[in-house]
Length: 391
Image 1 (spheres, rainbow, N blue to C red):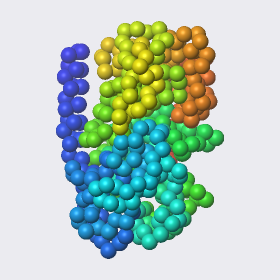
Image 2 (cartoon, one colour):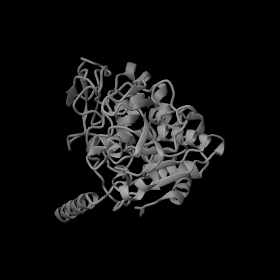
Image 3 (cartoon, helix red, strand yellow):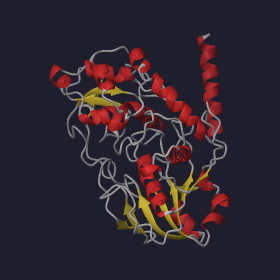
Image 4 (tube, rainbow, N blue to C red):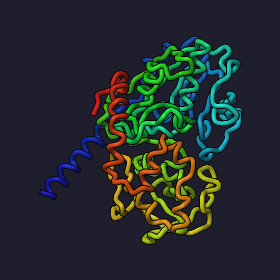
């Protein structure tokens, strides 16, 4: 029976992988949107994940005769080399000589003068479908600026590698921040195009404004599709495993634990110099263009390696793994346990309850049950904006 199950599981993975390869991102469907760009002055919101086939979208559109006036860049910058949380300055792109306005520097929202003379703003960035991944926050502010200045906004949709499930606590409004702007769960199961439709349709922009929104859909994608991102979406998400683990392990950024920044396997391990579990260790170092000053630089961290099938507690795919956080909390020293969580954890989780539930040793099943009513309410909103077949 077990062998039959394994063969069946492998078959499903193979079919999913083959199906994923047939997906065509919106950016590649130039016949759908180039006619809408011709003769107009365009601003592009883009980074290193923005490309048509294997060529950066800005370079491609310029070669096709599209008039691009400027580039807006999100966290990590246009070419994707800035560290997480690092302020990015305005600059001139060395390859195109176009001005690059950073939306992760002095301000997050384009100014009125930034959009002067712009006929349309084009957004093309690979998201990972997690509430605290800041590309959706950048999109929100650009949409808001476009709505205020009556500039049309177009999203070239891309598949969501975590688009096959919905999980986690729904953010409470009092905990809104740049790492959580909307009342959605940690994993919301939508592409970035569907998400834009929801932000617009639900009136979540300032003063309930709506922008003139167009979404160029992907072809061959459904929410059952298991999609491997062809280029790392940010410096510390280098592979499919890190993207899969990110919804759970990023919560450790609000604790005393390291998530492996400054190693070759960020968001695939957790550890701390005082961690009582000693089956694995790592030593963070400075890595240019990835992580310049990681937590516990030069110190040996004891921890758990989720690249190993023997990792304990095991990672259960397709959900937020509270057991991993609870286990780490229990296995720190008394001193570290008293300061295990910091204020950033509340911003990431979107509530105060999760932290207290872990401290109080509440069973995971009971913690998950406490999310259910909010998740059910979100799903009713979500279903109004889906462009692709659901799971």
